[in-house]
Every structure is written in structure tokens, then in C-alpha cells.
Length: 333
Image (cartoon, rainbow, N blue to C red; front, side, top):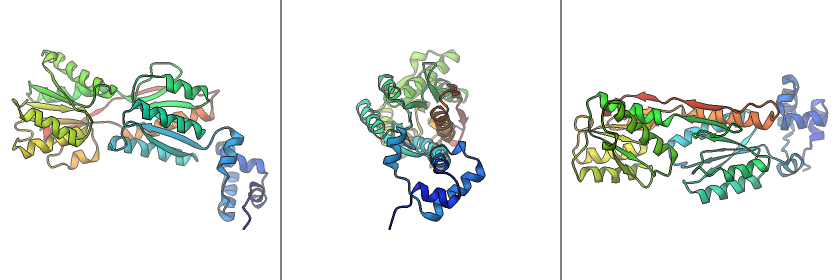
């Protein structure tokens, strides 16, 4: 059976091959009625575009890359949902890469994305080295930072104020009477962990307490299992009055270990997490958390990226900073 060509679609829709090409590659430039007619012809004829050929002609593909630190974290799953929804609406596909917090793995993922000639890359970088991102830009690949602020004017970024989030979380614990607070964090090579810890210290300072009194337990990963190990360390000594965890997975692990040891939450130890993932509200003791606009992070970052790709002459770089929201539940009430 012969493959259906762009010329076949054009003849069926009563338009030029150039119009069909615009519908496939630049749909915003085609009048809605014409676009619908062409799309109907594509469906009726079963046309499938030759991806590699169109990529070679255009110099790029109808794909974007998404590089995250930990796809196993529900936070990034929700970000990816926002990215995919916008990309799908605008006729793009998404290639996902998981760096697992490793700069080396991130480099390999970015090289693969460049080889696929993606239009742009959304990235939560594993470190502060911007050299790898500059190399993408040198190849004409736009880059937008996700859940990470930008430190340069020619770079779009969508992030959450993690210092403010850490401060609000610990201020909430102090407001309910806690004076001894432990911060259970992930690796302090991760910017978010550092800023949430710094926010916790700022809350103590603001309450007239010595920020040096904040005990910090650094976990190797930001998982529930790592949270259980951190809780074992807490249980081996004098229990604090409150625990602030740098994400909900850590907090859920701490909660599980405390309850297993017969520690009452919040009567003996108040506990708060960060991200407000779905599991937070559904845990045995519902978990207080700092909510982030996770899905919106993905949506807005993708809109900025594709605007930069499609409208390079008029695109204005933006640095968007969201504020997290305290959600108080049983674990601190």
C-alpha cells in the first residue's frame, strides 16, 4: 500500500502543500477553518508524517525535552503532566530524561536530546554549572529552567520561593509551641534542600531563637526509606518537639517510623513536609505540608519555552517565582 503524501492531503483538503506543511509545523499561522479541514484530511487519509525527513529539512523536530532530578518523586510526575498537556495541545511530543541528581547522567541525557534535534529543553538542573545549558543554546536549542531560579536576564525560569517555604513551615511549628526543631533534608548539594533549610533557620531567627540550634539530618536521598532511616537516628536520642522535612516522601518515612515506635504525632512530635503530594492527605495521620503549584510549573514553563521557540524575535524572557502555601493537617494540629 502506497504511503499517503503531503500532496495527497493537500489535494483532498483543497489547499496547497505549503498550507499542509504549515498545519504540521506552524499550526498557529493557519486560519482555524483551514486547519480543521487539513486535519480532517489527515485523519481520513491516514497520513503519517516522515519525522526524520521533516526534522532534517527544518533543522529541528516537533519534540521538546524534559530533564528532571527524580521522576520517582510525585512532584516531578505532576510537573511532567503539566508539560505534556501543553505540548500535546500545541502539537509537540515530550522526551523525558531522569538525571537522578547526577550531573554526568544529566550531560548524557542532554546530548541525546541534542542529537534528536529537539526544539527546546525544560530542565530542573542537578547543579549550578550552566556550561551544559550554554552548549544547548549554541546549537539553537532554547532552554527554560523548571523549579529553579534564573541568574541571568536571557533565560526563562519558573520556580518556587523555597526559602519562604522553609520559613513558613517552621514558623507554623513554632506557632504551635515547638522550640526544639529538627530539619530532615535531602542532599545539601540540591539547591531546594539548601534553601528550605535556610528558610527554617530564618524562622527560628525571626522568633528570637538561635538558628544554630536547628539540628539538620541530611539523608542520602529524598525518599520514604531515607526518611525512615532519619527517624531511626532521631529515635536513638532525645526526641525533638517538631520535625520539618524537605519533601513529603521524607516526611512520610519519618511518620511511619515514629508511629511504629509508638511516638504520637502530633502530640509527642509535630511533623510537616513539603510539596503536598496526593499521599500527604491520605496518610495514616494526614500530613501537613507546603503546597507548590506543581502542575502549573510544568504548564507555564512549557508555554514560555514554546513561545521562545516559535517567536524568537518577540519573545520576552520571564523569571516567574511562585509562593508556596501552608496546608495544615493532623500532623501539626
